[in-house]
Amino acid sequence: MYKKLDQKKVFRDPVYGYINVRYQLISDLIDSKAFQRLRRITHLSGVKMVFHGAEHSRFNHSLGVYHLAIKLLDENDTLNQYFDEHEKMILMISALMHDIGHGPYSHAFERVFELTHETYGANIILNDPEISSLLDNANKGLKESVSSVLLKTGKHPEIEQLVSSQIDIDRLDYLTRDAYYTGANYGRLDLDRIIRMMAVKDKNIVYKEGAIHAIENYLVSRYHMYWQVYYHPVARSYEIMLEKIFLRIYHLIEQNKLNDEYTTLIKKVIESNVTLDAYLELDDFYVNAFIKKYAHHKDSILSELCSSFLNRKLFDYLEFKENNLTQISEVVKRYKDNPYFIEEEVVSQKTYLIKDYDIKAEDILILTKQQVVKPIDEVSPIIKGLVSSGIKTERKLYFKHE
Image (cartoon, rainbow, N blue to C red; front, side, top):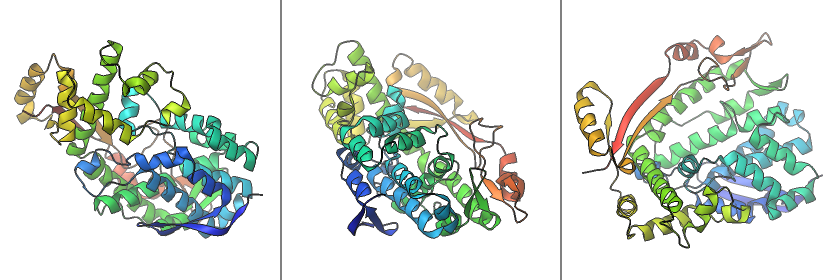
């Protein structure tokens, strides 16, 4: 049904060695303008300010997730036999394109402008002339199936769980890849064991009992990666400062005090009037260019934020602890009239989410030797103990360095 390349294309990857592309459609999608744009979007925006090796892109990560989809189909006979050729292609493309809708600097941009990369990703799949044409020519209905996986509509539940759930090929790649590039040891996972132990029961992805130890390690590793890497206060300081730059630009545009060639696209985003072509022009290079320019802008707040951002003069921070409360009170008073230089943030992380904590949580299901399906916290004493310990939360105040 789907044309294979006469000779497979190979990407050399520092994490997996070689990533093979066997189908013409996959090769064409990788070469598309929208996918190549992911080379210009950093995977870990703030983290690279702490871990200098973390310069990898959404392009690297997306190829990695695609590789794990291939590995899953190659090495897990149960899933290979369960999916037909069309469903396998939906899985491969969904894995490859799952981050196609990210804006510049990923989540920082999306939080300020209230966007979701899943929505924009589905829009790109359905309406970008190049990508939609490739998918339509390959198989009518293919683009609708891929977009439904990105939006988790329930049309392909097994594929949706493989691409986005509490344990999925997206998380398996980014934990492994981010650990490699940051030098952190927490993200070292037994990928082979997890992938080989997958099965399907009643349209749910389940894991054979032999995978429990590997999944326990995955959940604990993910927990440590969040606290030691993703939530590192210096990384958060960098991203908060970036969000303040976006916010100041947003407000200046609304007040008609900022109108130049750099803000044309941002204005369209604010007005919800951005075309796909315009959105695909937004990347880290675009943002870096106007940050460099605005470091010399006449607006003192914008120029100071941009200059500090470029020169790594990041926000200081204080934890909300008894011995810091007096100092926190003084800082709050100091910046009460200037919200661009202060931000309170609460972050939390749970080793394993259950519906008591998050109604949208999807259980990691274990298929016991008796062929009974149970949530992992019912069969793993370690995960049960971690669930009962509650959610870890930290509250910090970030503010301008004096």
